[in-house]
Structures are given as C-alpha cells and as structure tokens.
Length: 144
Image (tube, rainbow, N blue to C red; front, side):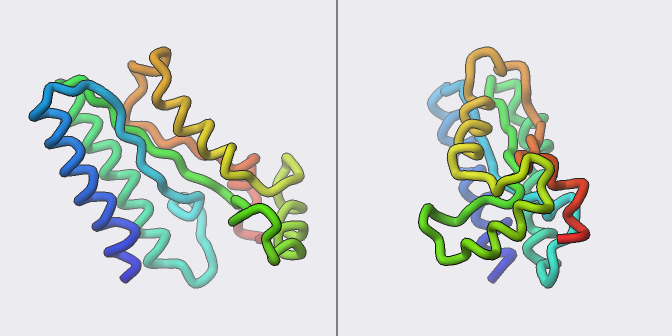
C-alpha cells in the first residue's frame, strides 16, 4: 500500500503528464512532493520514507530525461506541517514546534510557496532539485 500510494502513483502520474507535455509540445514544470523523512528517519516509517526517497531519485532522473523537451522537474520535501487549521493535534504540534529552530510547525502555505517558487519564470534553469521546507528541523529530527 505505502509503495503504491507514495511512489508508484507519482511515478505513473509523472509518466502520463510528461508524455502529454511532450506530445503537445508543452514546455513547463513538474513538481513532486517528498518528505523530510527521505533524509532523516521517522519512527515506524521505513517504507514511507524509502518511497519518498524514490520520488526524489525519480525527480532527478526525469529532470535529466525531460530537459531536452523544455520540461523541468523538481521536488518539495516538507518537514512538520500542520495537517489542517483547528487540528485536534494542538498539543503534539506545540511540542513538535520546540524542536524546530523557527519555533513553529509549518503551514500548507509554506509548501505552496515552495511549489510556486519552482514554477516562477526566474527559476526556469532550476531542475532536478529537492527543496527542504522544514524550518531547519532537519538538524533535530532524530530527537523528535
């Protein structure tokens, strides 16, 4: 299940999108989503973290293969992101924020801004990259 949802689905979707873009002469951007766990461990998340690591490798390879068609492929790797406003996980989020140097859990808007970054005309030469959006949490993940 974890591999189908977190790696196979993005792989199939990327293939179909890329084929459609190439067939229609569309130059543009593909942005995938990974996780901080592709770089540091989550408890009881081996398959999830490995699947998201595979998304990062897929991103780099697709960037190489699709570049000649004017298609850039990048990835955003979120850290701790609040699941929704008004979440019942408030205590967990407050405790988690103490491990993040910026002092807060990320928001969906933080991830949206990173995706938008990869879609800006000014970043058209950026491809094959993964942007970690984690408030510098990566340094502290093993303690979380």
